[in-house]
Image 1 (cartoon, rainbow, N blue to C red):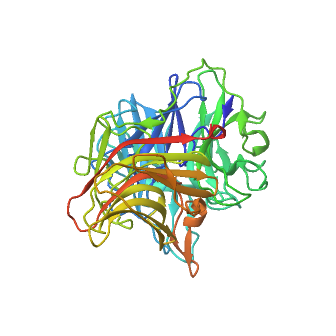
Image 2: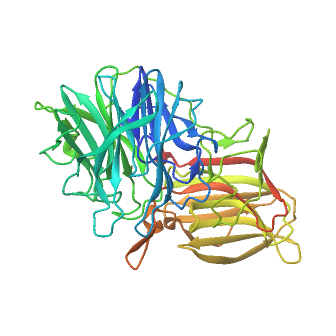
Image 3: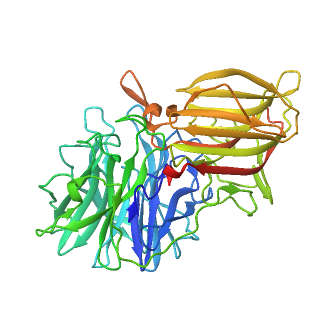
Length: 529
């Protein structure tokens, strides 16, 4: 059986692809490196993260992008012996405007090397490539219209793409304006039985989210929406365990079974906050007698039958990372800049992080983090740090974005003495918690975070057992819903990612300080699977 979500924590906008016996899912990464996470499976049950495709500034520049900007909804396809990855980089999205660019890169292997990205256009986002049986290729995207008197989501566009020159040909054409649910985006095109099937997201990214299908005998339309309604949605049933279902892509397995990969979310309360962000699930797809794809009940199920493929288990990720490899493992991400020698170095049993910008810095922060995948989990590290002023900080964070986080850190007082403190930021408002614990500078200190559903607890230890800080912190501020900000009806910030647990270092006066971490341990409770 397949147990959903198959990709837990911040893993949204899945595009699924089969090449031979191998299945791949690519997901959005927004302001985090490496860009576009790739996951692999042979049986659709067991999935292994391969890391991100766009792992350098040659491939992707995220310096300065806003929270929940950066990489939106990639497209992954395979033709001519090459993987083709198309992706959007969003540099601005608030107050009615969107500055963005779309790119294509190719690689002979899913693990690279990826070619220099070629710019395509900036008319919209959520790009994908469709390779037709006649050898021609087509780029799809949603069309964004900035004009205040128009609907911003102006329909699904298609334009021919020349694979040899990596250039767009002719003019774009709108092939669908979606359904009454509105907000048509995330298009993918498939061909089956003489029909072209257009699968797209609708209803926005929240609790009204869904996926729709339209079809045409002609590539350029007109496309007829499925008269049965959405392919998938949770919008009508708040009691479903998997909410926000939508944004589907389809795959046919080697034995002829069809599946949809889709977004979902698991709120902590009914239609409440989603700390784990938008995750990826799989649903079986059948085809009706009149040729429409169907998901049972058009709703997401937690447990579904797997295809009859040979079992292909993968090793469970190690709970303890002692940083014994020459590079960060695929479960780690870095914020707005790639992991490079100018700020990160690894030696057996040690990760050294040079201090970076403040928590609101968007060009060179020093944060190494991993996704929260379960409501009940813990994260622990051991830190060695010698701060010389209050401008030097290093520690452990439970993080959503620049405006929402909790931080347990070592710093120095004005007299130079080292102390352990806790700081929170909620919607940009800082709270300095009253706890201040003297410690010896340069002496190892253990830092521990426990996520217990809606509560976060910090603990510390110096050469002995952990001691809990007398703080009950709100985990739910690390959620998509809390991160969304509107001022006077104008969008200011999106919440598209998910909670992260990480190692964070600041050097606000440019003194060149660094912190050493001997390990990072992440554990989930049994119900977190």
